Length: 235
Image (tube, rainbow, N blue to C red; front, side, top):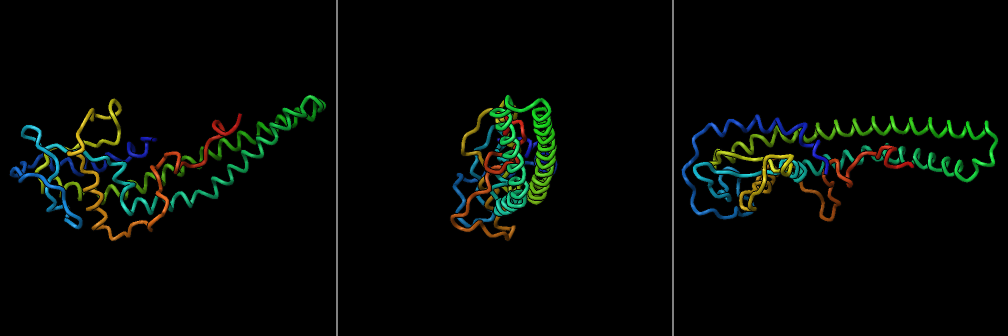
């Protein structure tokens, strides 16, 4: 899974919710119980235990973004938008492979000029494909990050409200596993990702994906990647 998706936008939510750590923790809540369906975020009972005098929780920001109805919808739309470009690059790659096969099977039967022209054609097409794939990758990544940024900006107040209402003094982003990220280990009981997603969905007004719809997948992953570069598609 590529982590650049989160790293370029996660600072927004960190800055937005950092302020809650300055507020005094709320009174110790009653014995935690799982929130029932439809419970609002502000009143949902806390599910994470206190650590010393500071209540700690974790949120997988990347999974929270793509787990929202809005994220699933927008990332799926983005994939469909880039499908023609993906097909175009695939067709270019197929053409290059065909020319390379021709060079491999018939090159020794060609005169020097014909063989040189074929080799030059392959090289030119490969460079063109490489540039096109890199441009598509950059554009896809930019639009992907724009979607994530938009959702994060609206998710930050949701996280802030929940943290303040439930006495949290510290939240970690668990998107990047250790050693890339700061989180070494945590129990499932301190994971607030689903709670945040459910609350975000409740206030967003965006309907969930139709039953049986194929998930959009993790942005940047094999299920949602933009056109592959020639380095991975040619020999």
